[in-house]
Image (tube, rainbow, N blue to C red; front, side, top):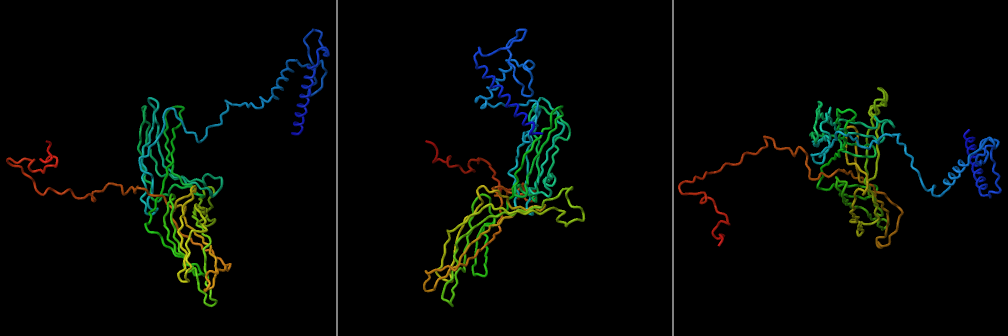
Length: 497
């Protein structure tokens, strides 16, 4: 059926174009060769043309000349280049497709705003020893009319955990878990407010075990502050306000570098490394490595065997681990599966946040068989535009760790004892891999924990200032000026002339 409809429109279009072209040719002929036909009533000239659908006699199917002229002008206008270049915009004023979720909620009677008064939210120390952080500020309600009755005004602070690989795909309950940390009922009863700005203070304590804000390959953790005011005005929607808080964690650092020793059997190579155990996202750090035992004297054949460093690669890796929980509909039934399956599915993923390969830049010493060594100092840091997440460990099973991986490629060579410059490759090579545990955390800055900022309690107040040792009694002709020592400017030698 569709091909019949297409053939019908195609044939109709071709016949119509043929008729228009014939009509144009007839108009170009002289008037003497035209034979107009008039009816008995003496009407104007009429030209008969065949229908594109069905042929009819000329006297029954008659078309007016103005309609043909309209077709001509329309065909000419559609074939012109100017019309092809011009585009018309079609609007549907009566059709409404709704409002985007990103558009803010606008209310004509009032508006909400806020101001944070607390310092940047930083959780100092690890989850077990951190005292948390305080969030405080003011919520402003701006009334635009003379008087507006507000039925309620509430605010909440929530933590949202979004799983990028949830237990069940396309399930919003499995993908997002929201936990309410604090709720403020700022207006428990309806109240009439006048025009102007009204402020409502709020404060909350984020406990130390809570995770920091992060966006990893498996999970996203955010803190949202939401407020809602309901005006008691007919036709006005509720006034909503939402902001995201950036919560960070700062772990203590060590002033001394960490020392690690690795041995690579069956060879005698020993690697000694000095590196900082705690690093930050911004900045570069040094790793010092010394390789010993890279030469061996073979007394039976009279040769010296060397291990020469050819290539070195360092890489910063981030290992993320999380447990994707199941909602009530998708959780396994009781008695089915293990306890871990009832809790959720464990997800693990590793990504590289910094990497570099070196082919030179180290010092080699092969002067003696007992004191041969390779020393190098390399600089490592995060990639400029790398996506990272700081070290964290949560109670729900989310854990992020980092490690510095160093890979060295060495090849074996030998030379006679009496001719050490005559080096020969043996074709034997080794890959030496070392992994160093590294902690990635944010900088603490100049801030300190909130419990250290608290004023001293009564027991910590020091004793009162000491009393005067003796009192000065002025009797008789003594004056206060004779007791007090004069200043330099009041002495006679400094008096003006």
